[in-house]
Image (cartoon, rainbow, N blue to C red; front, side, top):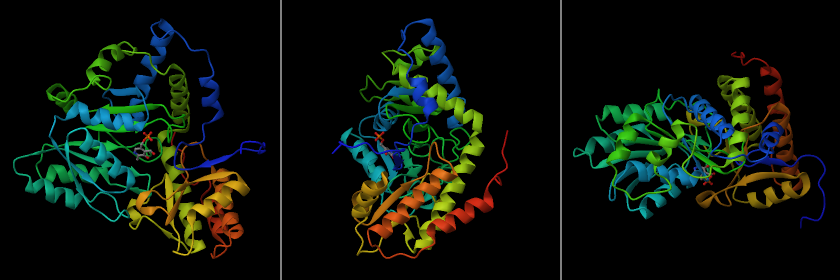
Length: 398
Ligand code: PLP
């Protein structure tokens, strides 16, 4: 029932969409302008240029009015041809969805199975590529930050694995829940297509999606025989050169994007990443103190964007989330598919600070109490102690 007003701010602590800052909301409230006129041209040229460093690239970044799923499809249909093999790694729910899409589009995805508690394994990828002597595999597709598990894959090591196998496969990476939150280097890590979306680290509402493309990916798109129209990179790149789009762009979301890039530049990307690392560590300290396990089993792969919490068999995490929503006006993420009924997820990414984390963790701890779930006390305190000890310690990079 949407019958009563809840005072104060709703806490949107799912791992995306994230809280949209007032600055971005205000920026988006300006009148929509002529998308073929000079004001739009200046806006288009500006965001297309200044989004590049957010991906760690000097190459083109293509912006589609779509959710992240659209950018997944664009990455596949521009670089591959019907029947092409794609090596994928089952990090979790989103990796599986991308695999399903590849199948439906007429490619031949091969999924390396895993336990949903680890990132994509560079050694397993290297082994499989080394066996592929005829280079039947045309691409390796990996989710950088698996939003269903809170596990981050080591993309630089996967690049190395492909190189060690001396294999020409393209590297396609989904950064939908990591871009602008977790360190990422499209160029330096030798990624061919980076897929992303607007509604997480970029602090925008849903509705924009992205492909950062390497020269090798652009060459592949010229050779690709897969039918495509809306998603065709070449259709975009021509008009983009002048700051325009081949069709009506999402003008007001692009206002928001310009503001969000300003904010990332003002804070400094390295500071943004350090902030996320610190909030993730504080969250893990709270979860551990409560006595719960973290889904991610490898500390080297802990996600700085979200923490997925395993609950004992006797606990219904969805009932806990409902208690927290009804009593404390906070939304948390559910366990998805294999983790349904076994886990919940705390998002700590985007427009976020120490006190919003303190409020978030307090909401979880009060919810545990209210729902009568056995846990050790002191989780929030452990997080607050860590935040107090480390406040201002992440040396600000100008
Ligand atoms: N990939 C990842 C890692 C995601 O987290 C999501 C959404 O949460 C998607 C893909 C799908 O993106 P969208 O829902 O914007 O289409």
